Image 1 (spheres, rainbow, N blue to C red):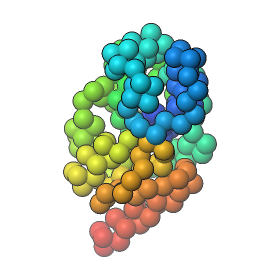
Image 2 (cartoon, rainbow, N blue to C red):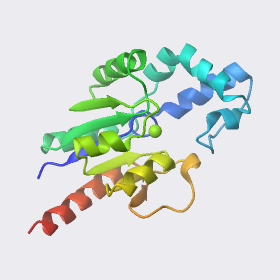
Image 3 (cartoon, helix red, strand yellow):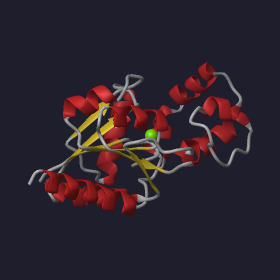
Length: 194
Ligand SMILES: [Mg+2]
């Protein structure tokens, strides 16, 4: 049975945070080693507007430089080869960010059926519209929202998403586990249908 697999980009498929941290440390003259709060402006102790300008001015570098997460590419190809559909739903925005991201997909040979650039909008709308069966995310608020509409979420463990894992959200630690958990969810769904 083909599944619709939803994937976040930053911190899930793209190993973005090491690149962000390196550039932010240079820019702000800091030595942050770990982002333990999803609000990066707070971590660096700068106003949000300032952080926003930094990301706008350096967008091209910040979004084109990260490497794919270990195991992500192989796993995405594995699921696509098995007849599943791959949907990206990201907070990156349409326009320039979309162009840089699509180039990045091409460069790394990351297959996809569709990519939605939601910007600041909630991801739940796209997740529901696309009929996604399972979603992989690293930001706890998004995970909560998506789980609240009944879509199982796999939360890739990071320093900024610690705490109790809510109902419908399963914490996982790498792409090998993501692969196993997606297959488990598929199995469960298949047996429910019989
Ligand atoms: Mg993310």
